[in-house]
Length: 287
Image (tube, rainbow, N blue to C red):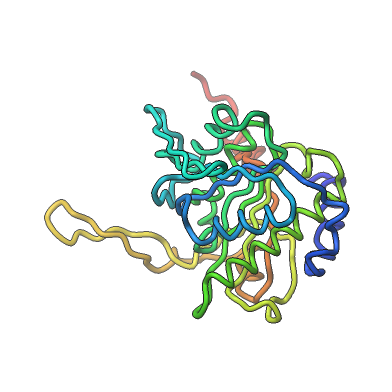
């Protein structure tokens, strides 16, 4: 990560647990495209919409008609039916990434300042992240050269509506902090999105906010078992043998009660060391 981006993120994180009014003046209104993968009427996205509007932002909700979890950044290439549910709410019969690109090109009168995705019902940390439709919506935003933030959480037992409201209020503070640090419509450095995960804890139990890298150790892997001839059911099996986590990973911090913030850029290229190794292994290969 470039030094300028590191300094930007360090300035971002420290005051994020301040009261909601702490950055209200600096933040100002943003034009926000709001998406998710759970569906346009899910508790998480509705709580997010309410909180962002209460903070003064102009929010247009463009989200899937039905649950589209696990769709990653896949796109719908067929004709896409859209239903207008309210003046600023649109239900799209397509994937989360489709919702973002369709909203930008076909619904909003002008490009939004920011794309927000979530809050998702279920965490998106570590190697599960690329499968997430919530995160996939931010990848589509990056493709359109827009900053984006994905929010996910594991709701605790009790009142999920209150928990989603807590996450949404945190999102308001995070966005306000971004705006205070970078008071331009860009909000984030170019080609940057954030994957934010909020633990299943009450307000006073959250340990803090940490910027982390996407982990690689899977707590389990999705497997399929034949339950009838030609019919397979999914389940979560044991992780692959020898799994070891990378330093500074998001998963352990999330499990310890921290809100984790992982900067992502949609670039799937491996590290420079691995790039050099593969180039060495393939050196001299002829077509």
